[in-house]
Image (cartoon, rainbow, N blue to C red; front, side, top):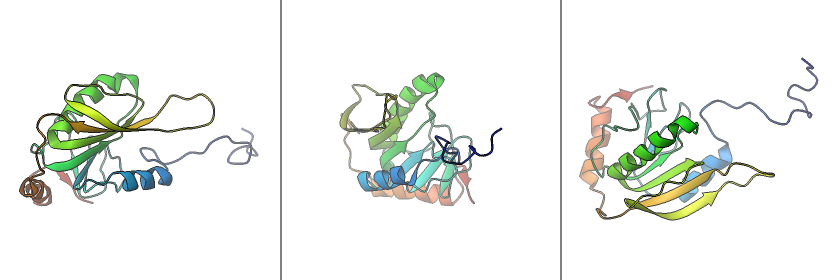
Length: 176
């Protein structure tokens, strides 16, 4: 290997910690997502976005729950919004669609960061952001969805009960 090109000016990219995004994306999300409490699903091990983080395979930053994204151990309408940046492999596309329905159960508002656009009679798209990079790229979207129909006010007692259940260990919480 030519070490002169490894990490030098000739290198066209850099390695970053897996399951994380650039700080500018984090700042953008914190600015744009105003709903609280926020549930961050598929959070990975380093994200601090959201009031509670969920990941199936990785210990997320506390307060966190280890749970399957398709069967969240949370009550209906227990959060104001859900954010997810799921794995983008092609074999996750159907699971992501199923997850969108689960997110709409847990909150009236849902943000999805992915190369896929979810279309459903269950929710409407209220905002779409597209990441722009030089050249030809697969678009990465951040889409804000609002649930149709059951537009309930967030029951603060339900949200409080969910947070309390996590802190009391009644939901499979990950403490770090």
